[in-house]
Length: 375
Ligand code: BDR
Ligand code: CA
Image (cartoon, rainbow, N blue to C red; front, top):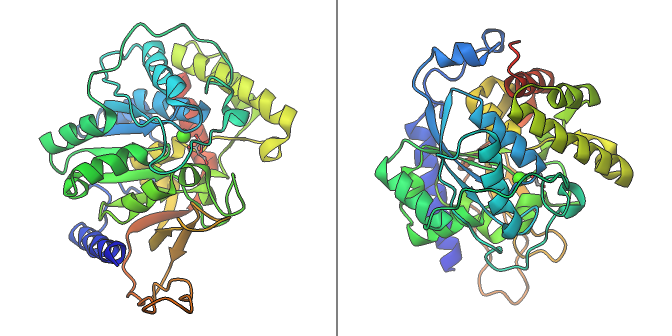
């Protein structure tokens, strides 16, 4: 019953958030597609960069997303908070530090996050990301160290210091955010927006039901979706359409920018791995950069306000994202011996969900940014 009440409170908070900030997108960011041949130089001339924290499990496509952020003047990366996911924290943490060293951005603090999900054993995706999380490509040991605070502590401190200013790009399991919200239940209302790569309304990639990030820590995802934070969900429905071509991998590899070149090496190794294993139909899907890309340029995706719930009790379906488009919000049929039948709730959106993507335009944007070309 308590869980139901918590959920209801979250829903109401969520609805208030949307109502208060009608378009949700920050002013000046929702431009029509035709106007958005956005070069880094154009962007530099625009408004002050928006401040973000990247919560991540690098991860080959996480690496691309982090590099994209570091090469995008529209955003200022305030912190990176690695979590266990694609590979254990023993790898995701040094990988985040490595990526910053490659980009020459060791000024950005990195805080160690959770080494395991809230309630479950860690399941990794080394079969895609390689045992080291970077496709097996060896980069030097990082010289910089993580900060002393934990990821949930750092997220909380930064958000509290600038209420309503920071956005979070969450591209791994949501354990760090859930821990921060548990410690500080008012924190979600202080976050400008959360852009999540995770979930799917069209089937999973780790089970038929669940997308990997939601699957790894469904309880954390449930906390975040019920928190009342302003959420944009970039799920497999759109990221499955972002496929890098071999030619684009070649462009990255031959880039003079160390960031583009490193991205190319990682993607070359991942492509080889995917072709060997036949995973993803041999296609080089890059999920995470779109969460950041659509934060920078909302017109890359088409969004709809939905009510998202996360399945946490299923034997086969834990981590499934269930998207309600209209009333009622109805749960599974009650058990015969349950004391009360579950109530139906009115429809209240708690997330903007990406349903379509201009993948061609986004892929060009990504490659241009990482290779310093202008489109
Ligand atoms: C997500 O899972 C991870 O393997 C990727 O890095 C991405 O965040 C895609 O399901
Ligand atoms: Ca990831």
